[in-house]
Length: 134
Image (cartoon, rainbow, N blue to C red; front, side, top):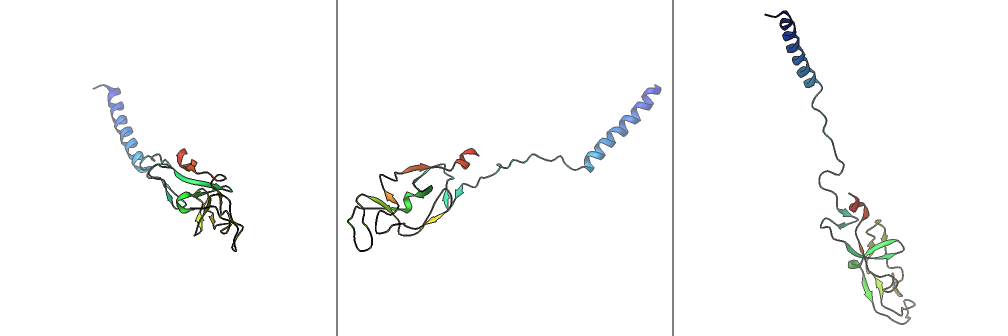
């Protein structure tokens, strides 16, 4: 047999055994983790956006209020509980939570124009930008 083969063959075997041994000691290779992997939390301030649909809101001083939590008040003259309102306007009977920032608001002027008139506060479609970016 060739002298080089007698030296090379055992060294190759020891090298392969060493590679397998040290790989098993360091543990499995870490897998990449993606912060966005898995189901995303598509609920924001109590509103579920998992169906991909936007919601109708009005913008009241930077707070996006769900139209479904508001009611439209008819125009009415001044009366004992407030100044009245000359146009259709937004009211709520219970505190509402702004879908964009979680702030809770009560009707600011229950005897007047509430959250403002329909012309001052038109209905907008809202879908959170941070959910769109994911």
